[in-house]
Image (cartoon, rainbow, N blue to C red; front, side, top):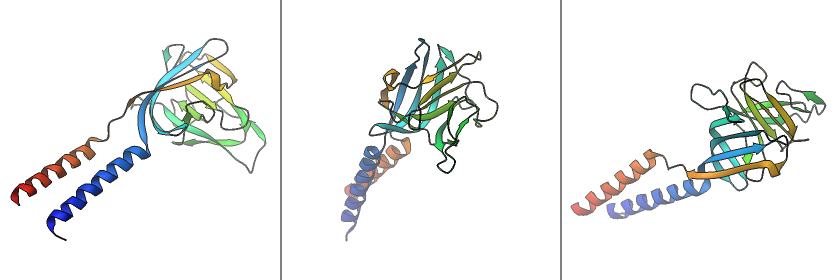
Length: 200
């Protein structure tokens, strides 16, 4: 295979890889809100990957209760956990967050939101330890047992009710750009192909 064909093959492979990566996980910035029966509102934003009805890989998380911002970690983001039931110990138990449900554990990094609310399973919190000391948190768990929605604000105010998907809203704002390194590599590759073409 001559150099011209090798370069064509490299270019086609790169284009296919970028296209596949972009289509596999479309990443957006989102804004969300949940309105409790008493009119109180939790709202905020996060970045995530769209996978059908689900939004995964949540990061850059913010939240506020009635307009009062939650405290975040040093990066400016709340921590994200999901609620994973223990099928071997199905007895009901009360957790530090106030959620009552099957004995379970909060799993770090696997939080999930959904467009219609039916797949929500997340805890946005200001601490890396959900069973330790924390000030703010917002949790929805419609993906397990009796769904619950809980929020506690900076002033210690607490609100809790059975979750209703109809009161959940999430809207995609803008696609997050493909990492600069990918575009840089693509630009360099195209430039190299152009130089090589002129030489021949």
